[in-house]
Length: 468
Image 1 (cartoon, rainbow, N blue to C red):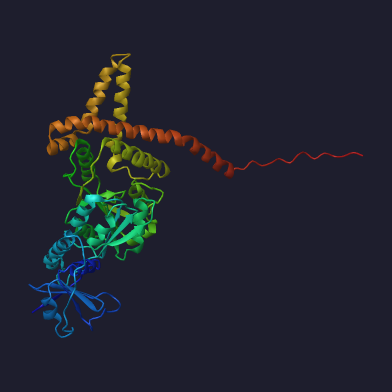
Image 2 (tube, rainbow, N blue to C red; image 1 turned 60 degrees about the vertical axis):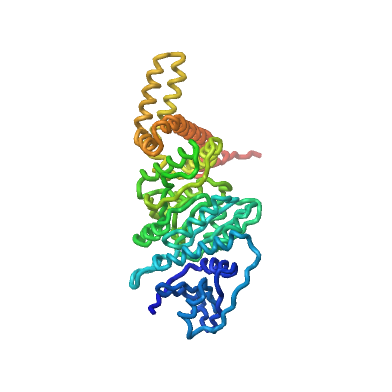
């Protein structure tokens, strides 16, 4: 019987332990089979046989005869069943189903002999009250064609059972004390304890496609000059409703039409080399809420000369349900305002994706359209100019509206056009407001620098002679 030596992610040992303790298998004492050089032992599988994972001097087996057939000369002959603790009825079945999928796919995940080994990969997920979507996120992660070597879930002071859900799937859980610190802080804590050379970031309300992890590793391994890569949401958002469908489909379209050589980063489905992440200093923890911490990190990476690649095939499903109020709060206060400040502070910030030429012209056209409509009430000829601006807006975004029509039909397009034009309006007015508020402070700083460069020299008073 030929044996295959398979690498197994360390976090799977927790999965196997959970499965065994819930009566799904047996735990064997292997005695002499200790770790080699202080590292966990390998996982072995025989063709057509179950798998065994050895950690230290123990192995966890979900079908007992595999250990006997593979290690009969090196183990003790004792077989000690593990008693079931009291647990909810769903947990044993969940762990058993998860392990069954992983075991059935073990040979598929194995690299053929003589080929280059895949880079080590750690998946980091910040979560705050993840709810049902978080369970779907982890369930999808277990269905990936390329399994991660480590899964770290940073529980940002959740008040629900998010930490317990993560442990049920075998993830390493880091619990943060209240109050919530924000996803940037949580991701940094996960990156600090990660052992792999590639960090893959995703969110608790994101369902990764099965090939997403593999595409990330393949991209970074194929081209060693690329320091980070990211993908996009797919065109099948899970949440119903006009706002949710519009928001997620717009995101998919923007990323799918962006330049592959990117100047930003995205943490819903993005990977970065750990060395590059550490050199950049991680995410800015000034953002206490989900904001533009990923965009700001991408800007710093680009300014340091790092290469970032947009991998359009690397996709994920967004599970979040958007409301109109939440859309405005997120787009204005968590994105437009801080993003405008980044652009003012760093002129080299990326002008791609949401800031491409078409988007900037559309924002200007919306403002002109509104001004022309207002002026038309006093001078009716301005309504002609307003109609011209509306036609320009439609033509500038015709390809997007055609995409919306292909996915959801003309009725959807008619309803989202006012929403889309309103997006250009509040984005443009927010940027203008931030610039206007920043002008006095920038002028004051320039004056201060000028005074430091050319300090005013005090003239000596003319000498006077005293006469007695």
